[in-house]
Length: 233
Image (cartoon, rainbow, N blue to C red; front, side, top):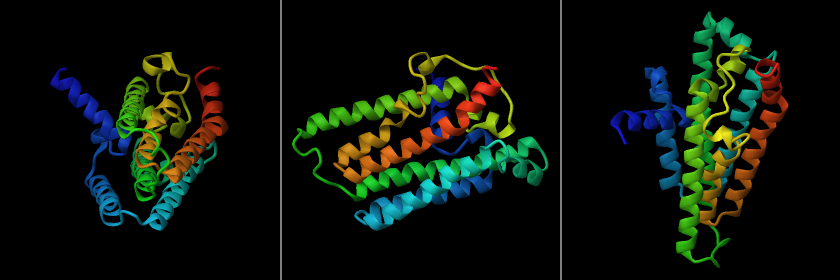
């Protein structure tokens, strides 16, 4: 595997995690560094603080899902972003920066829920078998998400087309999209379940389901109509 390809994969990983290197600024870097430090603090110094974990998840989920609904709706705040920052590109970059920050905290909060509410849910299964299952699920979800992001581009991953309200590329049926109708919201979410299974956390599994249902709700209520209207008309 070439260094160029590894670099591309690493850039994709950072981008889907909330930090887009090609659009990096000092403010974005500081914000993501603080978010990363906060997540480490929660996991390593508030290890079993389930109350804090629940509050963190509820807040991050509300802000993340609420933000995409409020901004990306047909008459949403995307118009305000464009007006506030003077043009479409600068407005989008501001939106992307906020969304990336929310992306990261959303994922971190789900992982923290599982690690802080460890249980005995799968204690009847040999630990080695659990480890194999978790590695397989996590690896599959991660690979599918990376390849799906590569197929559609990071701009589409951050809903730039919905933000601008128009088509910015051709509709793709490549990569995981040849095999899954919606790999990003489906198989690409397996990591959350894998972490919950590893910790034996019932609450971790529950919030993984809640998060996936809310993401799919946005797809069915907002994104699907946009895709039909713009890309399949």
